[in-house]
Amino acid sequence: MRAMALVDGLLMASKFRGCMLGVLVGDCLGFPYEDDVKPSYVVLQNFFDTLESSTVKAPRLIYTDDTAMTHCIAESLIKKKEVDARDLAKRFVKEYLNQPPDRGYGIHVREVFHKLRASKFEDPLRPAREQFGGSGSWGNGGAMRIAPIALFYRGQGTQLLGDMARKVTEVTHTHRNGINGAILQCLAIEQCLWLDPKEGVKGGTFLEELIAKMELFEGEENDNGLLGRGEEAKPFSSRLHYIRGLLQREGKAIDEKEDVLMKLGAGIAALASVPTAIFCFLRAHTTTIPNIETSNPLRRTIQYAISLGGDTDTIGSMAGALSGATLGYSDEYFSKKMLKRCDGVDEALSLADELLAKSPRTTA
Ligand code: F2R
Ligand code: MG
Ligand code: MG
Image 1 (cartoon, rainbow, N blue to C red):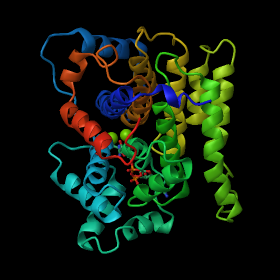
Image 2 (cartoon, rainbow, N blue to C red):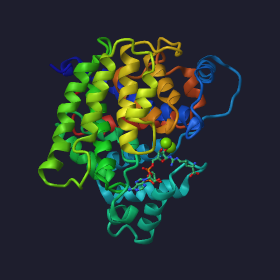
Image 3 (cartoon, rainbow, N blue to C red):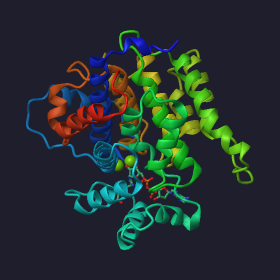
Image 4 (spheres, rainbow, N blue to C red):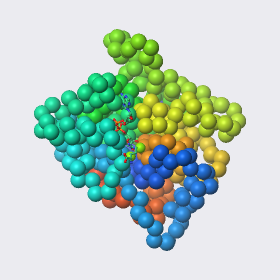
């Protein structure tokens, strides 16, 4: 049985804050390492230790496109109280054009923004459909920004959640993997909202529920004959099955990381990053991890995600969203000193509160 009844209004409010802060902190802490060579355990341990303890004035950690676009979706939902693709497209473009520092948007998604603006947002879905010769983007840009959809439409049923995740993603991403990655991250965050933080996470149960939901969406495509020749039938579901095996493995510390990188990946593709983020969250919430010294599961999640290298801001941010949605917001997890170093904290907190107030579900 789901732990739904245990989540009261206060805890849900805390989980909204935890989730939005998880997105932000994972992004801010991961960005310095994005596309860098895999950072060593020692470097990362020092980085996190210093963040949590140092009173020395140090440079601020800026957030990137992951958080900027997440905030656009939250603002649009708050204003429109539903998914409105044109409003969203306008907000993405305005935010992109007004970005004060370089927020690290990818080269290709910028084309979508320029086309949207040039076409005066006449058909807000058209530029995305034209990407990559018509195949659409399979990048993780849809998944990295999906948290507000999971929060806003929590408890409204799997089909609605998936449909809404698809709708916001299609403004920039139309490849099935770009869309399904966003759906999977959305479903996973929503599941975290109903977990009792005191009980902890049970990896096997969490995955079973998630696989059953994801197979609905991936199965639908097969039934409708949407698969191209040679395409893997249920790539996200099959990676979730793989994760279940990894979590059950004996002597897990040994060489696990190489398997994770080889089988799941840590790249910019949705398929090579969303299952990875889910794995980081589940691993960090179910055991200690060698070379990561902390009793804080949120820190362990983000530190582990960054230690994999590659798309560190995005995998850190997606894993952080899952961890924050499970634990909620408290100093114990989000230390004051660390939050002081990150840009955008107040904005993330107030968007979390407004999203909760405006969401259709009035009880937890
Ligand atoms: N882009 C980055 N990081 C790169 C470093 C940026 C650097 N600082 C700079 O100055 O340029 N980070 C952010 O982008 C990722 C999310 O990307 P999104 O929104 O999905 O973008 P896009 O352009 O749609 O896809 C990303 C890349 O994937 C490849 N790709 C996607 N679909 C493809 C297809 N059908 N065929 C071939 N290639 C495809 C392309 O290389 C795209 O550029 C996050 O990491 C975020 O942090
Ligand atoms: Mg980024
Ligand atoms: Mg990234």
